[in-house]
Image (cartoon, rainbow, N blue to C red; front, side, top):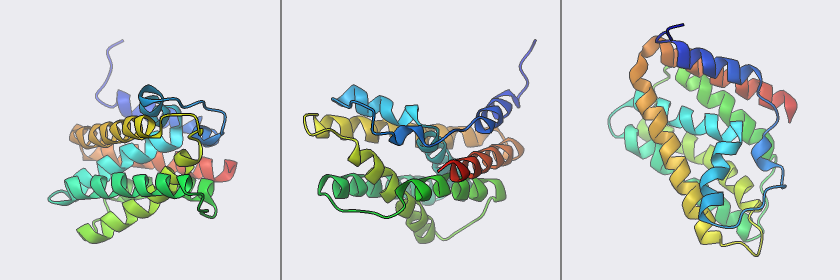
Length: 191
């Protein structure tokens, strides 16, 4: 059977229908270094979908937002990880992470345009919680700089994949946004 141009979108929608809890934040991972940090964002559907959505949305915004929105996310994610390392607390972390998937999916699906500063603020606000959750999971004996470097690299790659994915066409990107939003809704109800 020959794949259609909508096959990747249909696969993503199917994946979203089976979204479970935010499995990246179980506390059961043993992160030890760069490779662990690199793989960790790929193991949780919440982080994976949020990062793809940030890239897709940044591409829809165009111009300076193409790099500024993902950069704001990466910077704030690092800050969130640092807050966790310092022992600071953030409320409702899992709920905000699930909400980020829903909101970012809706933004992609609706092609909502924002000023660059507003887009950066939205991305950074959600990133703070993503970084915090993953910062909590770094064990004391691990190499925190190696894990952080791997995690940042994986996040940047997922943003880039989202940006590249925006080239498949407006209709496919809109369907992808709907699928991401549906997954966010499923995550919210499973938190």
